[in-house]
Length: 136
Image 1 (cartoon, rainbow, N blue to C red):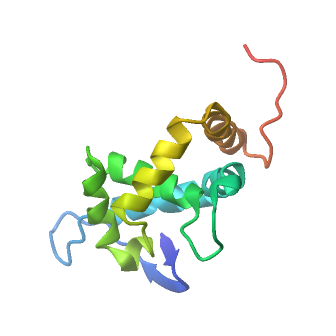
Image 2 (cartoon, one colour; image 1 turned 120 degrees about the vertical axis):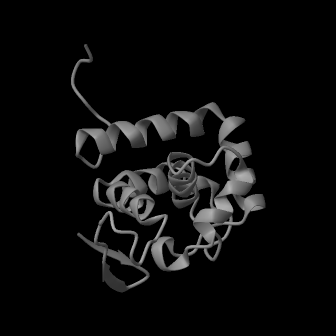
């Protein structure tokens, strides 16, 4: 499978021999799935109002990186450093303080929590909107 981060293509080969071991390669593939399914884009669109400056970290991308960190076995905010330390796999990752501010803002605003739910539904639905038929 080809993985592209920061404009660079590289191939991830999964083997059981321990040669050339990269402990977070599976996590990079998880991030790539979020990107390919449109989840990252939907999160970014839903949380766009949180972005205070153009040069700052995209809140949708911060949420994606936090989800990857949790899936990789992290259990506290400082574990985001394991993702941050793998720049060739994940690109630029927000600092712990930036990630905390994103979490804190989302947790305190019901509309932002709903934006997360809508982004998830849109990605699961395979379309660019969260509109769907009757639920059941």
